[in-house]
Amino acid sequence: MKIGILGGGLTGLTLAYFLQCEAEVIEKDPVCGGLCRTFTKNGFSYDWGGHIIFSKDQEVLDFMVSVLDKNVDRHYRNNKVLFKKGLVKYPFENGLSEIPKNDNYECLFHFINNSFPKPTNFKEWIYYTFGKGIAEKYLIPYNEKIWNIDIELMGLDWVERVPKPPVEDIIKSAIGIETEGYVHQLYFYYPISGGIQGLIEAIKNKITNVSNNFEVTSISRQADQWVVSNGVDDRKFDRIISTIPIFNLLNALEDVPHHILDTAKKLRYNSLIVVMIGVNVENLSDKTAVYIPDPHHLFHRICFNKYFSINNVPAGKSSIMAEITANNGDTIWNMTDDEIIDSVINSLVEEDFFKKEDVCETDINRTQYAYVIPDLEYSQNLAIIQSYLKDQGIELCGRFAEYKYLNMDACIRSAMDLANTVNKELI
Image (cartoon, rainbow, N blue to C red):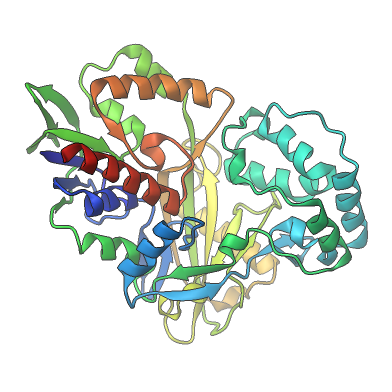
């Protein structure tokens, strides 16, 4: 039995690690990692988005930490929310005593006196769960930025990901008694060197068969085998597992019915732009990340790369990585790289994170597939495509293959479970 794994991101590499049969990972880029890539420019390293290693799933967490061996450190999560020029404890509902008194009162009052009816979309769910104050002051503006969509168009399939605060925590938060939200993220792990790609390389180093620079352009069934081609070379497999974006898979497959391709076009997603700003400041911040709901700024979150590892910056310097969601053809995506970088610098200077003259390095990267958007028709459309691919005998694993909003740990869990299923079938 030889299995072809399409895609050499975190999911694909983890699959290969756990499969107990011959497998080959096929990756289109010269470097593996997918969304777990790290970029370096003149000594400044930053990830493709804010990545940390944490999980409620102890088996998954143990795997990530152990595979890194000695190249890992543990950190305290010190996240904040930028609200009216002040840095408030994250999550916002756990830092109410730190916001102006009138805002604090409105958040507490509307959380307790909440008469919103049972929700039918994500926006209504925010009002229903948190009340008008927290909803309108933070959660709605922030989510409209990160999702880059009218959140009334988003469904409820995924909201179990968003923790619901206990009433007592909100009251404690409002009167200044310390409370913690998202406690499973309170401490996290991160590679000492190599950025988040250090995790990718650690897994890849334990795998024997990875083919880079192999972009899948066609997939066909010939007799009892799958033939995967890049237009020049062919690979033959008894079974294939796809971790690549579902759109790329369907475009490569032969003879896909038009109604399936049309359904795939209805699936929505966001793209991501990451901007790195290096500065001549040795200790810029003791924060991990800052969440920014203000629509005046392009970015929804910034991360302080030196907090994750001192090896992410040259000696005596610091850096910020800003995350911006956009879509191909929209106003932000159509901005030039220089325009986006200038906007990010001006916003960070305006919010007093550093002075303009401190900037010594910049970089920018864009990726098409970043966030799956679970809109109101999401489940219905996805089920049609999944049913078709299942009938073809193609298995899906990972964020854009399964088309689910999976974090790193959930991608690993999905890969571990699928590998376990396959291994049992081979016995």
